[in-house]
Image: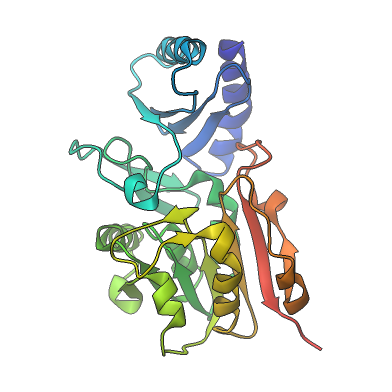
Length: 303
C-alpha cells in the first residue's frame, strides 16, 4: 500500500512542484493510517518523520518497511530520519548533531538555507508556503513584524515583496540563520531589523511601534529559561492576538497561525475583532491532513 501511494503521490506532485519552481515538498502525509509517518523531498534528499506510537511493534515494523521502500524507489538518495513526539520549544530546537549538512532550496523567487540532519526541523516549514506567497504579495511599502520568526523565511518573502521587516525570535542562532537567508536572496540584513527577545515580553513592553502587517506563529508550548513565564498557545493566544492588533495601523491586519491539532479559537475574540478563518486556503496541495495547521486573518472591527 505504501509503495503504491508513494509512487502515485510523486507522479502527481513532482510536475506541480516543478511548475511552481519548488524544490521541497511533502511527498507522503500520513496518507495511510497503518503507516504513521511523513516524507518530505528536499531536491534529492528525503526527510522522514516517524510518528508511530512508542512501544508499538507494528508501527516499528511498518516504519522499517517505509525506509526499505524509500531506498528502493529513490536509490542513492540520503534519508534523514526524525522521531516526532510532543516537545517543548526548547527541546524542539535543540541541536541534534554537528554534521553541518546545509542545502539551498528554491521556492519560487526565494532561496532558503536548510539543514536536514542537525535539527529536528529543517529551518523551513513547508506547510507555510502559501502564507509566504500571500505575504510577498501584500508587503509592498508596508512595515512588517514577524513574531517567533524562526529562520526568517516569511521575513524573506516580506522583504522580497518590498516591505520593511522586523523579525523577532528568542534564539540568536535562528536570527543569524535568518540573516543568512536574507543574504542568500541578495537582501541586505542591515536594511531590516532582527531582534532577539521574548515575544510575549516584547508585546507587553513600553514600545508602541505600529505595523501594517504582523505575522504571529507561536509554538504550541514554550518554556525557555530566557522567558519570564512559559507559553501555551491555547491559554495565551487571545492575549497575544489582542496585543498584536493594538500594534497594527488602521487598515492593517495580522496573520495568526498555530499547529496545535486541537486548537480552539477564543470566542470572545470574534466580538472584538474581524476574524477570517483562512486555514483551508493556507494549506498547500502537498499537505492534505485536516489538522495541518490553523490560520486566521485578524483586523480591527470598523464602523
